[in-house]
Image 1 (cartoon, rainbow, N blue to C red):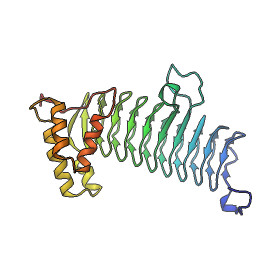
Image 2 (cartoon, one colour):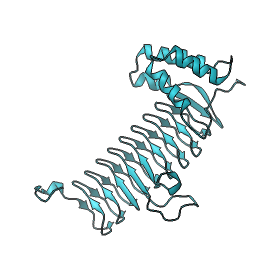
Image 3 (cartoon, rainbow, N blue to C red):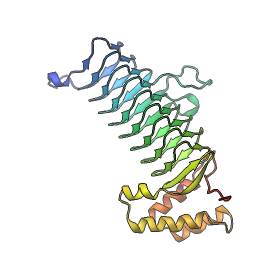
Image 4 (cartoon, helix red, strand yellow):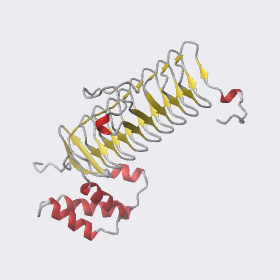
Length: 275
């Protein structure tokens, strides 16, 4: 806010008498801080952020406009990484995201780019954990007690269901679905669906695609490409090249191809051939 802006009563932060806001914390217009919250001196709460009660915001944490944090969430405390040495890493949370009770979100580390990011309009449900250096896209849902290890990437509109655990450095592609109580050790293709302990690829996230109004033609192309990619003839790399050639003008299919071709320390999650 510039010095010339008029400040009305509705613009001023509202801080409960029992809350602690350390010197140096930046509170923008319309911030509301409820009972028994603690906001550290390096935190930035942007316009309209709401901390309901008993929320702790620590470290170099920026929370985007309109985000709402529910009781007993721990936001920005140091990573659970033995290599962390107090480096000034950050946690950046986007706009209009909801963080529910007992969720934990940690900042980055020197070994992972120094920043953990959570996108806009995400839902981090009760007890979910976002570890150091994770990169979470927009509209992602982490269901109750979903756990992301360090350096995990979850792309836009993906859903990680309840009681699931995602291994360090795994990538979850956009619009993918991780089924409940799954252990995910390999990269999950965009639009894919995985489940199990350990998780295997069970098909495409057809329900999610329909709910988000993808066309029948697009879903048909994805089905055809999926069948080719995970057929048993030839090598996986040969099938990837065949699909890339045949579906080069189909953007959803090429999303999957680009994901597979990208550099990663994990392999691609495959169907269970035993079934």
